[in-house]
Image 1: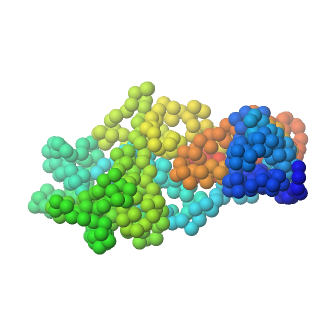
Image 2: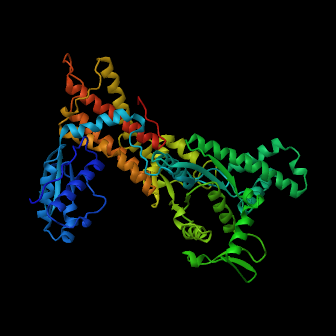
Image 3: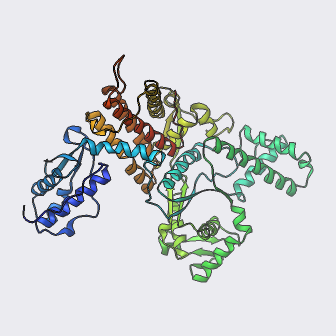
Length: 562
């Protein structure tokens, strides 16, 4: 090989990110040594764990990526990369495979250093600074206070709360916000339903049914005994004020019990009463983004990425619903948020282009706005979907889910699947205390580790630091899985996909169970503990820590006993 090689810094530990940096450094050295164009090298290099462990600990396809641009056969380039990697401290072996892949096997001491890093970092292991300096407004649930939280909102309650925790773990300043319409037609129908129930009359044709309506109406009568003797306007306003307050208190109670709390509750009526909506409309008029047609005022949103222009002020002079959205957008920006994430239901696809167009109309980058759409949720029992709630009458609620499977299983079931697909939750599976239940599987691994720690303490065994002794294939698999936690969290934050953390935890639990079945952690009988037992105990402690960290980010308990 011509030229003089640049020394490669010793790889103290082999996480995917550290190995990717090493591959990049070796590739840069190879290109320079062969007088090849270094501009063909991408800024970031991908390394992945092969599906078949016999192919090595990690693999990279960088030679295949670079070969054409570099003008070198991919296997030749892969051979140079393998030679450079094999000579790097922390790497046991590197070899060419297939058309130009490079498979890498790690040195046990460099790989095992991940264990020490986990134990040193503790609860902060996996956290990063990818979103440091970002101020994020995360709006989710936002159910109108016309009834209990249903399953669609429950999905966002779990996913939104988990996403907030994950973004914060990547350095973002996150404000969790709940916005609700307390001035629209739905509230009018809710009030009419309460009045009908209080008067012993049937539910109006377009009203809300369910036992909760009678409960709320009865409480209003208890608090305001003379309400039915008031003139209709005063009567309705009393039912509106008191009934909405009671319903919203119950919504907050249900959410809190589900471990979902908010920093800000903002009412649509506040935006109108404060003048925020009028101010937003005036600003758009002044900038020329509004025009008048047929007596109505329209936003030129089709010029800003929307599929059509939107009515802001109706021909009768009343504001359209988007008017509040415009005032709300400016309200959020005025509070200093530079990223606004809206988590909306499956019937809100039009809001994606609408809200991005609003941002552009106010002179902002449309990427200031992100809209996540969640699909429907069904509960299934004995293979049949459940369609009726005892209390809500027409929909299954958050409380129904918690009653059936508990908070941990309810949250985990909602989080572990991507939100852009309809979710069926089989109550027969999620209520079991077996490994068929994914949350039980993960929690059992944590409890099993806690039990092992207690047993080790009884034997006087403390975690050791000679990680180079961890050479068994199952030990290596478990260590590499621990090392990927930070990458998984970064990806979950960047893609707004908390389900990646849940799936990772299931993989980690599986890796631990396989390790435990193959590697003796504590001595048998009267056997004396040695350095290998201590090193394996450290690996177990690190695994327990990462399981606890991941479960915490999902808002799920990490039990010590089960």
